[in-house]
Structure formats: C-alpha cells, structure tokens
Length: 117
Image (cartoon, rainbow, N blue to C red; front, side):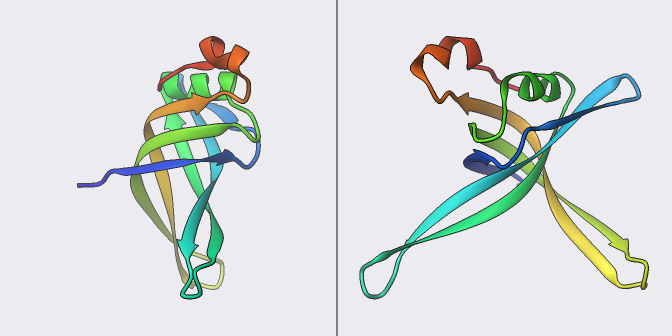
C-alpha cells in the first residue's frame, strides 16, 4: 500500500501550471516532528516535502492556499530518477495529493476556505 498523511505549513505560495488542458499545482510543506530526548527534553525537527496536485484539486489549492497556511494532506509517494550532467544517478521522492484540508488562520475564514481536493 502506498499511502501517506501529513500536516504542515506551506513554505511558499503554491505554483499553478496549465498542461495540455489540465492543471497541476506544486507546493512544499514544512512538517514538524517532536521527539523526547533521553534527558526528558523535547526536540523539534522540521522536514520539507514536495507535493503536486492535479485537476480540480490543483485549482482549489492555488485559489485558497498561500504561504504559511496549514494543510492536512493525504498522498501517494512517487520516486523520480535521472542522471545529472556528470552521469551521476539522482533520485527524488515527490508526493501526489489525493485529498487535502486547509486549516484557516482565522475563524471567520473557516466557511470560506473549507475545501477538499
């Protein structure tokens, strides 16, 4: 099974592109992870993950989401492989969004921005 869930904040505004009569939006989420250390203190680690959404989900994310907004995302992982200019094998994992929810910053935005892709 290939299914992942994340909650994080948009690092920058999503980028919407039209491709052959469809749309794709690309964005990056900063996802916090908290761990308890051996001494009992908490440590925070931030990871950055790249996502893409297609079609109506792409348009909804581009319209309603901006840098700093918090999103819950369900996605599938995709690995891309290529050779760089020096012939070195490279790879990157990108997540394809299957569903998302936007958490508004202000209560008055809730009804306006509650969307799903």
